Length: 390
Image (cartoon, rainbow, N blue to C red):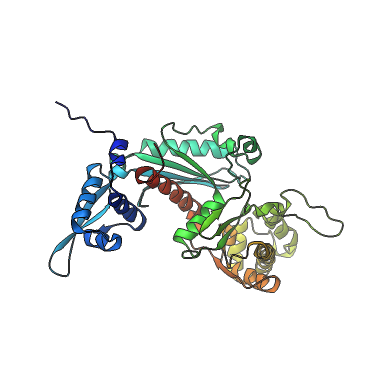
């Protein structure tokens, strides 16, 4: 007679608090031995054995080997198992769509990168089509050892709101013009810059900081704000939307919506470079990558344009310091994270504002996808051993 396994949710409901604690510890910190888990969670050896047994029953943990202990005994090493499943994280960016498949404890299973045909300032059909194709491709390659897909997270180049009356203004619904999310998998949406801020907090230079801000400078400009260890989204999902700071602002000038981004985005930067480039030198750099490459070689004309742009970013950071004073700003994005930007931004903020640490992101292009991956994994963890219902 075929054995009928109890429904997974029914088993989860019977987990003891110690089993949940073991799962969360392995989720947060990766592989550990039974003695290490006992010491970290203050659990007895019998309690640990029963907790591991509960989790092994549904494949949520697995033994991956043994290590020799100090007294001659071998200790089993455990990590999250295939039964815990996996998540898919997608950065639906302005230039690329990046996708990561990982276990809940962030072991990489698969990754993909798709270059968009053109830079996209707004979320539209091209991004939606790329997201649909990339997710379809990776799901077709899913291996049995990955376990169940627990959550799908997508970082968007737009505000993200719950209110249906606001969704049209954010353009977030444009994601679904071609992409149809799987009906049986939780879908988590978050602003891309907010995701990058979360990644800096968990993986980057803001690790250990409860108060900081991440500023992305590239095709677009945006900011993610973390205060008291929590991401600040605001009532309308607009916290950190610095592209909407009043600009220009001065005698005889009238601020326009989104004009600051028009001034400091990559396209505007290259327009200024082309206008100022000495004609005797021949064509100006074709794009920001070429500009920064020249500047890195010590080219004075290129360095002059980079410094000017860094002064503009420094002025924006200074304005933000006067509002939130987080103590630390992390510069990210294709332009912002370039080390040539850092000295001038620091000098400008020191001149215009209060003492503030300014650092360059070291996460590169993966910042956003790592952030949405953490959001998806956190949701899956809560669903399996926390309070989120099925």
